Image 1 (cartoon, rainbow, N blue to C red):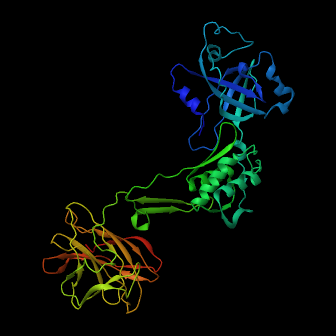
Image 2: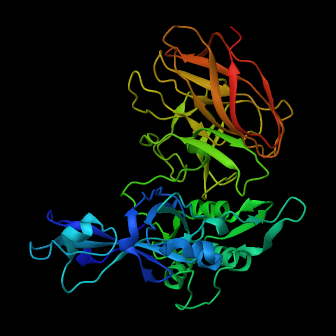
Image 3: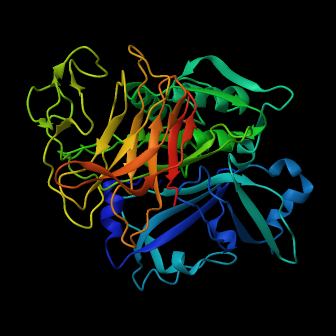
Length: 462
């Protein structure tokens, strides 16, 4: 991220401008000794740039100081840009000693403005001396520091004593273990204290906190993980100062949806003890269909009509999962219950889900208003008895007639509630008078562990 003034941005939009380059080494202006500037590459998500290499003119042996006194190496090197305008013919013939840059001869800075944009601040090191040219690599100021390892397998570096504000954790890593300036003010020469303080406040406002354990990860990896976990940017600006920024989301749309486990289509985890955070891949269903059920929370009295003549179909507070009420349904014949008409469209798939408290018998959940619609039944453990609170949440897919006419399987998302259960599924068809089991419509039976939560496929016997 490069920050420039409004003046700089305004002039950059003009077509008659050129960019001027300036090189200083150990605070000495050395641009006229440049034979060629190297390119500077930097990915948008990198903390520091990749550095560059300069070709320096050494006909007068100016750069032999690297050979005679190696303390001249690893001094601060800086490359800057400025906006230039074409020189007038009277000024275009300015002569300079040694070699010159064509763009410096043809263009000059705009009068009254001396804004130079810092592109790279680093160290000059490991020069090469072929003939009268010196090739000087410029390495980013913090490139080597970021490769320093934190802890080891034998002696891990732990941040477990408390939950850290991400900014405080980053500060300790950079100063205590990275050796950067720890001055907690704007006088800090390595860390931009203003952006760090703003970032800390943003993390606190969002209730972000981290714990960490390092067993040989580099400072670079630690910063990248903290950056990704907090939706932030940690980067070295062109002036060699580390800055911080947290991205914020815009206002949510009028209709929003919380993405939690019931929106998962699939997920995978790959544990790795060497990582600060293990990798979790989650596939969401982003097209959120409208809720078709009225009073699905059961908080209201109406909306659920009798299917058959059940003795009880009423709002009740006897068993509650969320809210204040649920729906109590008791039957004395098969296929009795409660229903409501839901509009459906041929060719679309619908998800049906509910929480059940089953005291006796089986619970059947599904579709069944017309002959071509199927439902599915979930059968609980045979040891069910009155008073057991054995909730099983089932989300189904493929609960519709397959187009090839062959029954394959039903995939359910199941969450057990502390009890092991035997679960099987069956497809029923509404004939206009009652539900009837579809031919070969019973699936295999699975034993669901008490701590199970995830997708389970039930294959039909055929």
